[in-house]
Image 1 (cartoon, rainbow, N blue to C red):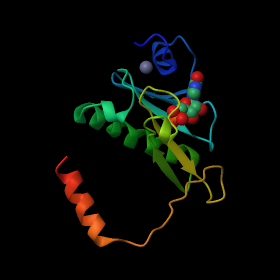
Image 2 (tube, rainbow, N blue to C red; image 1 turned 45 degrees about the horizontal axis):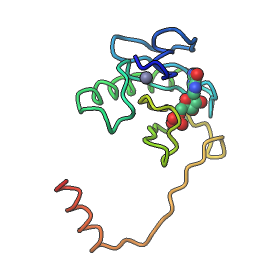
Image 3 (cartoon, rainbow, N blue to C red; image 1 turned 135 degrees about the horizontal axis):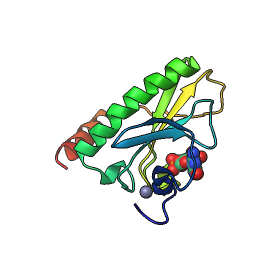
Image 4 (tube, rainbow, N blue to C red; image 1 turned 120 degrees about the vertical axis):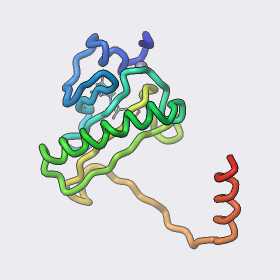
Length: 137
Ligand code: 5GP
Ligand code: ZN
């Protein structure tokens, strides 16, 4: 438990939350600001800053629960689809520095979540170099 961490406080029950799933490793609760109805956060009980600081075992445990909770949210909301997002560090929009995965049900491409991927012409030489660099890291 990290004293000044809001999600550690939610996990400890010191701050109330609308819980949708809980087990020994993980808690899932509704995001207070509901980007779309059913917007849920899945959080490991053990504090970590974000996914980049977690090992593969802890990440696998977390994502097993993301799968379970996403299907429960889908069944409950009848959403047409969903986005699953985890922000890591300020540059990506992370504001709470305790790992969390957003499950955001989608009802229409005109709803309150806007994600845009800028398209670029592929440069196959650069792709090959980059792939090799990542493979060897
Ligand atoms: P981030 O921007 O770090 O990816 O997402 C943090 C999320 O936590 C935001 O969507 C925000 O609405 C949510 N949040 C922040 N404080 C609280 C809180 O006290 N309770 C709940 N349920 N959600 C919170
Ligand atoms: Zn924490």
